[in-house]
Image (cartoon, rainbow, N blue to C red; front, side, top):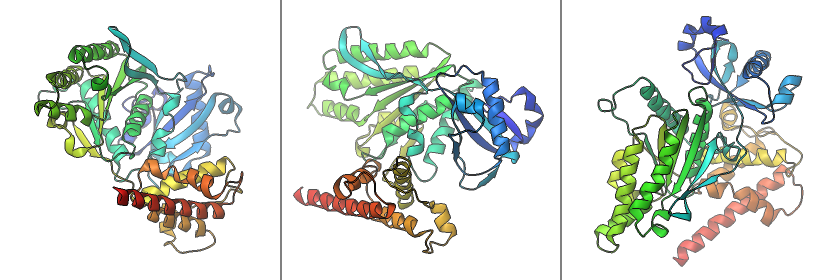
Length: 434
């Protein structure tokens, strides 16, 4: 292997420094090692055993995970070893630069950030990262055009520039990401998954990471009286987290258009001026905390045309998240079917080809490709469904058209087709009623 990098991709392990220069031109492969929560093994020992595993399996095809191990040490201490975010092609690990991330998950659920003046008011929810609750979200989200990679690259560059003390007055960035698009496309989930992924990637840079989720609706529904002061108090709580420079803090302002709607209404005279004070307080606090190098501000919006220019101007990345393409739908259905086969709801297990494999075969129908082509047809029929709606289709298929403990893949694909047809019909009926 050309070189090994652990955690931050800028730091090369001492015993392979000789290969550091080769890493400049080599393909960088990310290897995530999920260590069991009860394990007391040293990181160096885990690393050596994982390297031995990778030496035994040097040729892989794109993303790949090992969850069962013949070797006793790995079986005892490691949940999984995963090659992630790789291109859909054959990879020779001997010619790659490996970035290895060794982590455990926090099993605790979210805590609540309350305000001193009103302990019953929930200002935000707070997680320690990487969190067991967020595990697997990144892989479940399917987008086109490298959306996830672009977001990873943005935050990585932001932190790199901060570490290099780049003057933000000369080279400007605001630490703000805005994801916008219709409901059900996974914007909030993508924010959580991005924070989770970066908490793993930056383990050598930060001791741990934290995620704070603010629901902007509560700013108006709960904090109407003296709201500006209460917003300031909430961000003071967040500031206390940021003051610890050993932690990376992600702040999510969900459905940020609700702030916009309130401010527009207030300016039009249909809402009291207190609403304007709420929005101004939020904007002011966002401007203050962005000055810290260890914070990332994530925002989402469902109603693009109502996004306030004050938010747009603050966003370094304004990424539209729309309904999945046919290829993305195919991949979503594929992951659902693989899960049902793993759980033996669909039985016996049968091979399904990826879109890449179908393309390689020229989409020719055969005994091998027949079932995968059926999935592709269902995916094409499902165009226009949100990601949230797509992942409900297998459930609806079983509940409405199967109703047995086990079902063959062929029969289940028929049920999925029926479920999609039913959802299309129901959607048309709703439109006609409106």
